[in-house]
Amino acid sequence: MVLGTSSGAGKSLMTAALCRVLRRRGEMPLPFKGQNMSNNAWVDQDGGEMAYSQALQAWAAGLEPHHAMNPVLLKPQGDSTSEVIHLGRSAGSARAEHYYRDWFRPGWAAIRQGLNELQRRHPGGRLVLEGAGSPVEVNLQARDLTNLRLAQYLRARCILVADIERGGVFAQLVGTLALLRPVERPLIRGLLINRFRGRRELFDEGRRWLEANTGIPVIGVMPWLDELFPPEDSLDLLERRGRKRGAELEIAVLKLPSLSNFSDLDPLEAEPTVQLRWVAPGEELGQPDAVVVPGSKQTLRDLDALRRSGLGTALRSHAAGGGHVFGICGGLQLLGLELEDPDGLEGRGESDGDGRDGLMACRPAQQRSAAGLGLLPLRTVFGGHKALRQRRSRTCWPAEGLEIEGFELHRGNTTALGPCQPLCADPELGWVRGNVAGTYLHAAFDSGPWRRSWLNRLRERRGLAALDQHPPHHSRQREALLDRLADAFEQHVNLEPLLREDGKGHG
Image 1 (cartoon, rainbow, N blue to C red):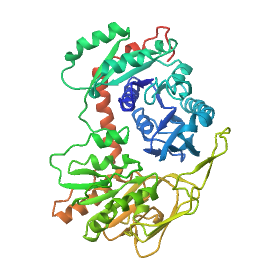
Image 2: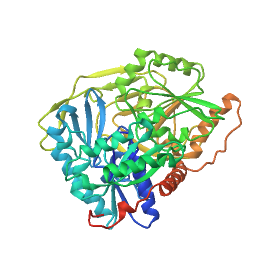
Image 3: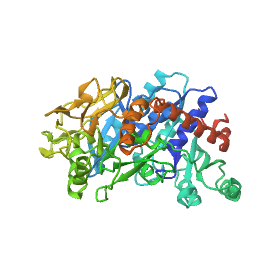
Image 4: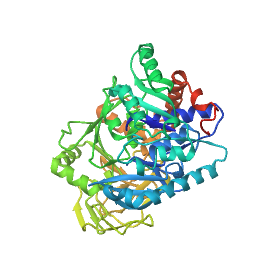
C-alpha cells in the first residue's frame, strides 16, 4: 500500500510506478483505491464510473480499467455536497457533515465487494493499494475507509511517501508516524522521499537521521521528474505548467469553478507546438488561437460564473471575431442556447432519508432554466439516467472519415434547434457551426489524427505549416511516459524491504 503524509505527496504516480515495475517482474499487480474524491473520472468498458488515477494505474499494470479498482468515488458538487458513486454507479448525494454517519457502512461494503470482484477477475494477482490524503487525520481515523483500516484488513505492507518539495519533510514523516496507533506502525515498511531536486547524496545525512530516529528504512529518494505525467488532481495540473519553447499556438482553457475531467487536455498539453493557458473567471481571455471549454460538474453554476465575471462575453467576442471555440461535455452544454433543469439536478439537493441502505434521495433544490452562451443552436434538458459508455465513431469535421473514440459521462439530452452540422457519424455526440464546435466525447483529443486535423485548422489560420496528420493514439505516449516513470522508480527505489517475506505481513 502506498500512503502519503498529505494530499498531493505523489501517491498516485508512485502507485502507478509500482504497478509497472511489478508487471516487469512478471507479477500481476492489481491497483485499488477504496475511496477517492475527484471529478476527474473514467468510464470503463462495462459503463462503470471510476477515478482517472485508478485507470492510469490499470494501464501501468497492463490491465483494462474496471470500476472495482475504485469502488467508492466522491464527486464534489460544491456547498460541501458530493455525488456518491458505488461500484461504478451513482448511489445518491451526501453532505460532508453527514457522510460518515450515513455512508460509512455501505461504503465499507462496497469496498469489500470491489476487492472480491477484482480478485475474482484476476486470480493470483497482487493488490497494490493507494491511500487517500493523510492516514492520521485524528478527527477522521475512526471512520477512515481507505487508509489504515484497509491496510489492517488486508495486512498490507505500506510505503509512506513524503513530498520534500513542499518543505518540512522530516516533520511530515516523524509526525505521521507519531500519530499511528501501536497496532498500525508495524505496517509501515519503508519511507519514500519524493520530488527531490539536486544530487541525491546531499540527502544522505537526512536518510541516516530518519532511519536512526524511526527505525524504518528509507527505501528511495525519487527525483523531481521533468517528464509530463497525467496529473493527480487539478491543483497539480494548474500549478506545474510552464512556458514551452517552440510553442506556435496558444490555446486558452477555461478554468471553470466546477472543472471536471481535466485529463481530456493531456494530449493537447503533450503537443510540443501547443501552449495551454488556463483562464479563470475574472482573468483576461486575451487573444488565443482557440478556447477550450472543458467539462463541468455543475454546468449552470459555471455558466453563472462566466456571466458574472464577463468571461462569457469575452468568449462570445472571441468567436464573433473568427476565433475557434471547442466545448467538451458540460462545456458543450454551456455553448448552447437553452439549458433546462426541471428536477434541480444542477442545483444543490437536500438529503432525504437516513442513508441506512446506502441510498439517499435528493429532493430538487429548485427548478431552473437558463440561456446559454448562444454559440451553438442547442437545447439541453438535464434529467434521466446518466450516460456512461465508451463510444467510437467516424468524423464529419474537421475532416471526414477519421476515427474518434472516448466515453460519455453526462446527464442531459441535447438537441439542435437550428442549422448546424454533426461532428461525427453519430449525430448525438457533437455539433459544429462555423468556428465553434463541441462534443460529448471525453478523451476525444486522444485520437491523434483527429486532434491534429483540428490543430491544423488553427495553424492554417495563422499561416503555419501543417503538422503530420497521422500521429499515434495518445495512449502510446502515455505508455512511454509510464515506462520512463518506472525506469526512474527502479533506479532510485529499493523494493526489497517491501517485498521480502519475513513474517511481518502477507503480500
